[in-house]
Amino acid sequence: MTRVLLTAVAIGAALLPAQTPVERSWSALNAGLDDKSAETRAKAVRALGLIANNAKAQQLAEKALADPKPEVQAAGAEALGQMGAKSSANRLLEAVKSTDTSVVFAAANALFTLGDPRAYDIYYAVLTGERKTGESLVDSQMKMLKDPKAMAQIGMQAGLGFIPFAGIGMSVFKTATKDDSSPVRAAAAQKLIRDADPKTATALMDAAADKKWLVRAAVVDAIAKRGDASLLKAVWPLLSDENEIVRFNAAAAILRLTK
Image (cartoon, rainbow, N blue to C red; front, side, top):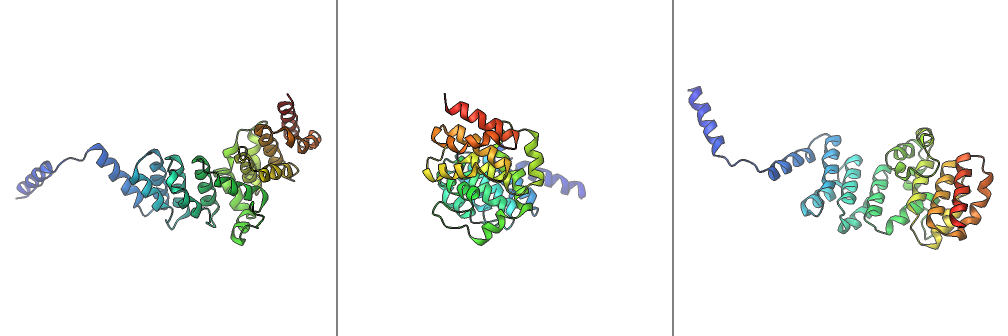
């Protein structure tokens, strides 16, 4: 009886149409996206970024932005940026309002990757502590930027996107593990290299005198790469900076912009 039953099951399975590679692939991803583990969901969501020009993948990545866990939300933002989902820009702007550091920076980086100039507003706010309109950041965002643990974490995760820049090696990793906001603010300075807004040029000049050497070094590097010799007046004093990386970067920036 048991043998007859097993045979019937085997025959029934054989009659079922086999899944195609595409169907199996979606089944695997859907299983990951529905998993109880936030870590597993985040991994599956992040993988969606490899699927460009696919409405289903984009929809699933956008859905991840509303996941209860910030690591999944951040993965959704990363995926949308990677897949080039420009039509998701407004959804990413909503994600920037999150009070979780990793989500804010993942969304900002996605907008930057998509070539959306609104990303510059976010990095400007990170560098200066206020929006380009002159308004201060909301309390939750200011609290986030002043949280040493949160900023150190994002410095290792997203902020280090500015590496490498001139003169920076292992020292930046040592700094990022014990510093508060400087790795992220340095990253923000680098993201502003191509922002043509005069307010950004002024902000970079002001930040060249920042108390954190990592920020000063990144800002000088950004000024050099902007190719605007009018900003050199903020770089000249740094030839006497106490930090040798800042001094070297200042010297190189001056030579680059005074050819």
